[in-house]
Image 1 (cartoon, rainbow, N blue to C red):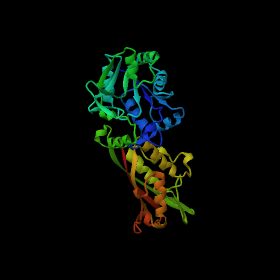
Image 2: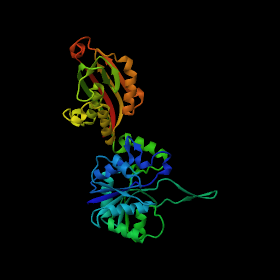
Image 3: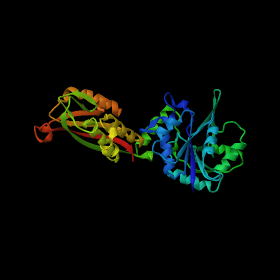
Length: 385
């Protein structure tokens, strides 16, 4: 069944604690909103409308960079108004199946979508739900009573409806802010089927929920899975006339310079290639061709930051970096700590996860003869499987 989706991401998430709204926060190195958007697009959504706060479009375009088939909409003062804004932005037919999803439930999978669409075929709506397993208590003043849990279910999202049926139900709704969209359809006389829920469809509400989600995203229970990748890079440049050399982002006065189309920082070039290689994303020449005049004399930190951003856009996070410079001159040790500090800054890593080393070839080869300098780099990073 063809479907579209509305992701509600217009809230401020004040219960999640201080900091950015929860849709922008990272879980396993990936923004919460991107988790949901990627999952629904991968499940086959024809289009996804992301409902945002008034000032959220620029942030959403950054967070969702590289994803197709989505468009923004501006939400309202309540969740119900935001859902209706999202429905209005959809371009499909009136009776198209639509999934309404809270961005804060980031572990949605294709299997959830399939079960919902199957349940929707015989009802006006479908909701993933779990039976209540805990004993329920009601407190009134200083008195508590046990509430029977028979027949009680925990509703989750995404929830599935026909677009025109949900819009008609909202048009008839007069009872204040609904707790979910299924309640609106039920109040309008519609039938709502229960599809199998999943504990993994937990909603990020409180600060401790993020710690749990981080653990789930990093292991096999996360459904998404994480893997460690290793990348290696190598670069070399010949010496030529000059007075300054750039290595690992640090300027060093020297009686020669490295010759290259950019600033010829072999350390940063090797590191850039290591990150791209770990991601299977080509090499530095694919992204910054030496034949392109715009990179003439360019600072190589631009190349490294480009590789880092591409890694982050795919949900990756760098674990550590190790660079080895191979040369007779200049002496690297006096500049090594400055290089580590600069690399840690560029890579957004703690200093103890960045290493810069130097070695010679004992007079052998082109580096030993002083004809050029070489660098090699190794990185490890963690990405979705």
